[in-house]
Image 1 (cartoon, helix red, strand yellow):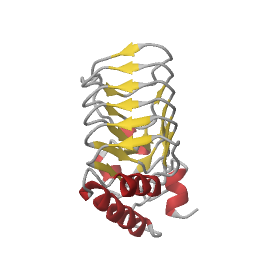
Image 2 (spheres, rainbow, N blue to C red):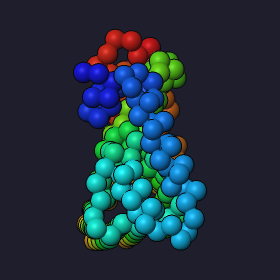
Image 3 (cartoon, rainbow, N blue to C red):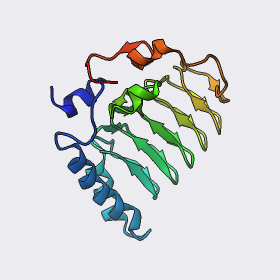
Length: 203
């Protein structure tokens, strides 16, 4: 596997190898143009966002500024709306269903780094997919972390940090940002939750 294949497989990978830097730069140029378009350049706006994202429905509306790593790893369904300042770190796949709305400052982070500093300093990182179902409203300043699935018909309250899966047809709010345990030597061998490194050079 090359580094891109490892990235998309959810394995530890190095983000500057095998053409990944060049892919990100090409996308950044598109995103830069998109973010500088005049509000009345609707035709170019629609054309450009469709060239940035991997797949869209007929109706897609993303307010500038918008930021993402690759764009091609993001799929959005019909009637997708994102308000200002959405950030999607799409080193892993991001699949967004139909009739989904994002308030301002929503951030989806598939990207992550190992917990143990020695492992983290090795340069390896990972991307774990995020999936969002149909008929979902995500409030302002929400952060969705790697590996999360949000079900259908869900409202996520503003300011929430979503670290675990959310079932269908609920309102979910709040942040789990609290100390739950210390970091131990055993953390060294993991790159994400209970997923162990499959390479020897992570320390």
